[in-house]
Image (cartoon, rainbow, N blue to C red; front, side):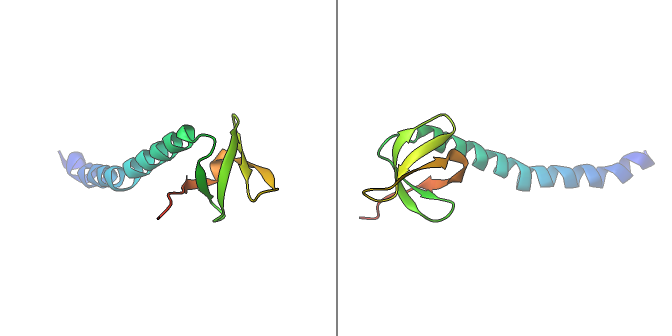
Amino acid sequence: MEIVTQILPFVFLIAIMYFVIIRPQNQQAKKHKEMIEALTRGDKIITTGGLIVEIKKVEDTYFVIKMNNETEVRLVKDAVARKYEDEA
């Protein structure tokens, strides 16, 4: 019985850490992955570097993006921060 009373605070602390830290991070990562998979040609995105670019082509592990009228580069899918929504 004495062991249970000593272990109970640790179990309680681990449960709190799971619901406050680990679970929300996993949910956020899942939503981000779904967002990246849903991106298509013509969508505007914001990169982790802060650039607002347009997707020209979707590949397995990267996007071909258009930076301006003449410049197209490849961007690794992990470098997408979020989808850009026009504020107009």
